[in-house]
Every structure is written in C-alpha cells, then in structure tokens.
Length: 120
View 1 (spheres, one colour):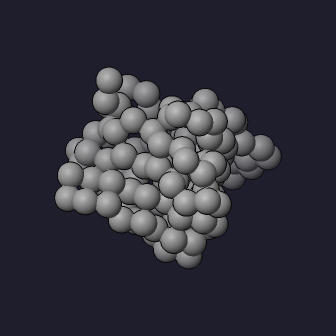
View 2 (cartoon, helix red, strand yellow; view 1 turned 135 degrees about the vertical axis):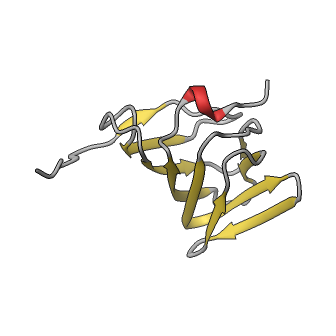
C-alpha cells in the first residue's frame, strides 16, 4: 500500500545563517532509513561546517547556485544542474551567490546526525 506524504517535517539546519530543510522522506518525517529526500532553501552567504558523511548525496539545484567544496576544489552547481557526492568524501556546502539556492537533496541511506560526521 502506498504511503502518502501530505507535508514535510522542517528540520533545523547547521550553518551560519538560517536554512530551511523540508524533509519529505527520511528518518524524521516518514521513518524511512533507506533514503531521505528533502527540499532545501538557503540564503545568500550561508555556509555549513564541512562533513564526511556516511551516505551518498545526490543534489539537484532548482534555483540559484550551490557551491560544493571538496578536497579537490569547488564546483558551483547552477539551477538545472546536479551533483553527486560519494560517502566518505569530505564536503562543504554553501550559497555565496546573491540569490541563495533552492535544491533537492537525496541521501542513500537516509541522512542522520550520527552519520553526517560534521567537522567540529
């Protein structure tokens, strides 16, 4: 039987400015451990701590631009583009552009505070 998700859970985000995480599918909203799907909205100038997650993250940018920094360098992902970050790879997300960013993030397995491994 299908599970109808009628609304997301809003989750507190890490970073220097308020960012909205609306989790539709994942450990919080649907009690799903295998995958998380969330819509993110981050303001201009937002930056989060670096992390070395224990999950693969697939991101599609809907509006604005998302900067993805790894040990190999930085990539600015524009609206209509996507990026994949493999588990175990250090990464830092930010939105330095004037318009911020709106994007969808899919994590396999689902995002959790225990497996994100943020820098201190």
